Length: 293
Image (spheres, rainbow, N blue to C red):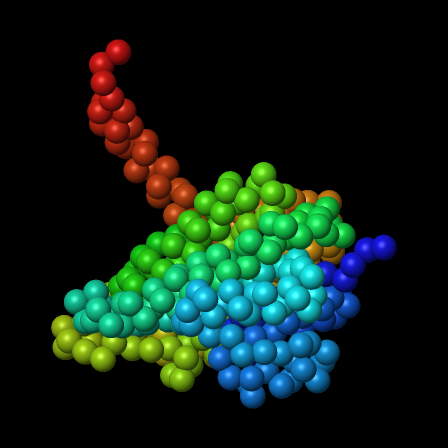
């Protein structure tokens, strides 16, 4: 008899974490929704999710205890979704070590600790109803593909999450475990709201200048907040379909990068084109550095 798929979702209080939890519940799956404060995910409890506190900055030992409790109760995790993350806005010269470490601790190290805590259990669980042992997803971004003015730290963390997913996809393939990264463009979540977006404590006047790329980016973030083109409900439903290989993704393998949004499609296409141009222009020089055969 097929077992009901189980999801474990971090940062399920808002944005993609919240909407993916709802989409998974709509499919009749079991969802363990987590957040730093359980009060922020009561809505999901009323929809049928199990809710629990989970802080991605906590120790690996604490996370291992959580993973054991989840597996003791459910016996498996079919979809491990790492949705925690935030944007640190600040020029490279402005951000301090503490702010950089906090960004990496939440956006990258917290993801790695979560994966490390759950993997021993996941590797040992039976194959699921979809023919896979489990699927692990990190969250990258449009910023995974390119750095930019006033968000260098965020871009580094998102590139790290996408690279982690690619590495995991190879490491875990022998165990029939899928790894992917979800890379949204600009979606109308609360991600850019003043309460969610953090700015560097130090502000240097030259980077506030609206004629500089950093200054222009700061103005743009304020203007696009709550005006982003992407619909997080549509994006989450599509993502859940892709992860579960259902709907428009029926019969297709889960790609190592799940790209979302018209803006991100165009952005990545341009990135590939400009990268190819660099390779073509510098091909002879690039290929001149091997030992002479």
